[in-house]
Image (cartoon, rainbow, N blue to C red):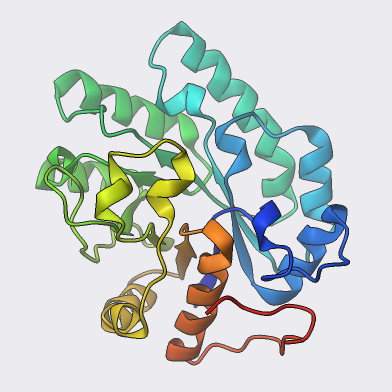
Length: 272
């Protein structure tokens, strides 16, 4: 089964583009969950989710709604003593989501500076063992991790490799569909803004990109293969600027023949 959604949902510049102009921000989650079957929670990268947020995710989304929680950066970007305490606090925070049947996976996103090497491989192996029993997705930014030894390690933990669509720049991961877990397959669309990937003033500039229909169609055979390769296939759009992720997620849903609720065009004009 394919679960389609976006990376994050609470963006101010989505009002009038996706969210009705009169909708209160506290109601964004309910509105989003009525439109999409899954969410990649990105705020958890910046701060460990509070009990209030977790309770809201449980209470204000449908019973079968799927949530992928991006791991706190203290776990993936700080490999010192503090990383261990961050990991314990993070897993404790998301436990109610797992108990409620809505935690689809934890996403471990490593920075480009996380290079492949013996010590780093040992760290990853140890961390994946500590993440059990939660389904885990690993996103590498550095192409050095794209080798058979790493893929075999992920398979041994039944952890999913995060496939990506991003600019074709030296050192970045390729646009390639791979499945290393029987439980889930995973694909993130970051946009192809090569000019701003490394040279930007604000982080959102990197993801400021609107895919064409032809660019989305390129992925249809791969997504269908991912769907057959695992119990669940997740496809998330991270090109969130000005609601571009919404437009592209809906367009991808149309290409895949997935059902989406009708949208009130008067209240929620989608960007062109």
